[in-house]
Image (cartoon, rainbow over all chains, first blue to last red; front, side, top):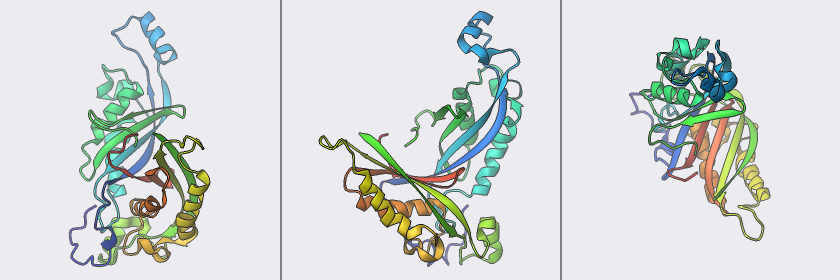
Length: 163
Length: 139
């Protein structure tokens, strides 16, 4: 959050005024949502779907507790010590992602997955598209953990994965 | 290149308050973090050093030495302290995750002689952390 009147910040922020040369700072935040999905595509026969996706192609779907980790970068505002105000970031993520995905069927309830298989790879890309418009900081990457044993990262077309 | 990571935990208190703002503005911007007597966290710090293993010892750096640096530079300075009042390097700054991670980077970078400091990740809680890393560094 930017504070407009900075004229009186003689003391505060003085030592953080000069950015560290060659060093980047990111803020990381984790969220959780629960959703169901089914991995199945009409481009394949039922036998091929079953072979490709195994149990994940079972007709009525199944669910996961997903963990979403996002990283944003930007200047640390000397008035707040923050890259982005957490309340603003949380509100944005709730509106763009959590309200849409949490306790929903990804296949049935999310437009993007009507004709796209909701694998966690595709989920990462969809979440990145939804969050890249955050106006107060630059979205660097998203990481989605589908279970504690697998996770996926996406940093945009030309982005970099975990440093 | 090999990356080597050491983790430590410390506990400290802090509060967010900008004297240039009115009490109402501080409340609005910082919320509960503005409560006047502060509050505390269990911080987790992950320090990653990059380098080539020494051909004789097989080590990027001696972990024992890294442990001592972390004890001296971080634990003795910050563990069981009130960050706003007791850590000189944070004077004049809001002790957010971003600023604490940056201060830790500045403290550690000149002290690590074998290998090169690659990343500092500081968790304030399981769901909130800041990363400080060399821009453009290859993984």
